[in-house]
Structure formats: C-alpha cells, structure tokens
Amino acid sequence: MEEYNLVYLLEGKVYINLTNSCTNNCVFCIRDIKDDVVGANLFLNTENVKAEDVIEQLEAMHDKLSSEIVFCGYGEPMLKLDVIKQVAKYIKEKYPNTILRVNTNGHANLVYKRNVLPELKGLIDKFSVSLNGETEEVYNRISQPNLSYSYEAVKDFIREAVKEGFDTTATIVTNYKGYDVDMPKCIEITKELGAKFRERPWIENGY
Image 1 (cartoon, one colour):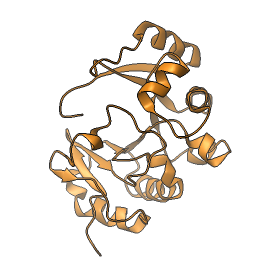
Image 2 (cartoon, rainbow, N blue to C red):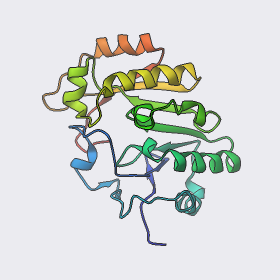
Image 3 (tube, one colour):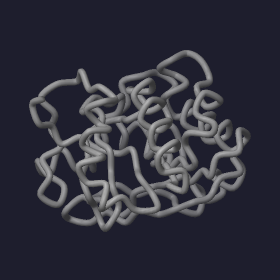
C-alpha cells in the first residue's frame, strides 16, 4: 500500500486525517500556512481513502493510542461519513474505552441533505463544531463557504448534535490578523444552542 498520513500524533493524541476536501476555505486554515502538522505531511495523494487503510495505520501505532482519538486533518472529515462510521465501529469494538471526537465545520447535514447525526450514535462521543462568527456576514468572511446557507446549517448541526445527546462544543478562532469576532455574542449563541463553548486563539503554527 502506498503510504499516506492518515493517522498522526498531536499533543499526545491520535488524529485521523481522512480528506483534503472541504466546504470551507477558512482564512486561518493551517493547510494554507504549512504542509505539515508536527512533521506529518497531511496532504493526501488520493481522496479514495479506505477504512482498512486507516485501521492499518492506527494499529501500526497502537502503543500510542490515547483515551481520545480525533477525526481531524487537512479537510472536513464528515465528507467521509462512511469511512468515519467504519473506523469508529472498529475502534469502539476493539478499544471500547476510547473517546471519539470529530472536529467539523458543521456542514454535514447540508451536504447529505439529511440529518446524519443519528447514524453516529454509539460511534462518536464528541463534536467540536466551528461556529467561527456571530453573524452570517462575519462567518462568510472568515469561513468562505462554497455552500449557501452554511451559517444556519452550522447552528442547526450544533442544535441537533446536542439534541441527540452528543458532547458538543462550538468553537471560534480569535486573534487572527484583522478579523474581529464578537466573542460574547458567540458565547450567547452557543448557550442558546445548548452547547459548550471554546475559544481557539490563533497561533503562528496554526495549531
């Protein structure tokens, strides 16, 4: 098998990189800043990522598996929904005490034109969702989505994730160059949606 960086380590946790495709083109995205994360080049040679390839790389570093594994890489992981489900099922069966988190832009239900969250119950434990701004105008300026109604879709995804019982956190990136985000308003929106809130101060290396 040709080697891809489908699995990498960051700050002691295992991350899974499924795709370089994304429905956003965020101004602060790390992939526009550098080619690697802590030495792992996350640009894939193919988008035809298979669950068995991910599992093979996971098992190659089984001694480094921590209590939490995160689906997050140089693209939007939920664009590979079927792969997430297959890999998550494998992990939950073999490592049942492992927490699985997906870092997402929250566009999945818009992309698939259905609520996919019930399909992930029992497989995924946490979602970290990029809210990115307090209004659609701010969100579009920062996230530069290629889908219409993306901002409302993000809020709907957060709301539905909470409703389905997932541990859900809405995040915003702050202090990136000249982009100002109203953090108190974002906290208020997050509270209304029923989720937790986390600020992600932007740093030079992107993570």
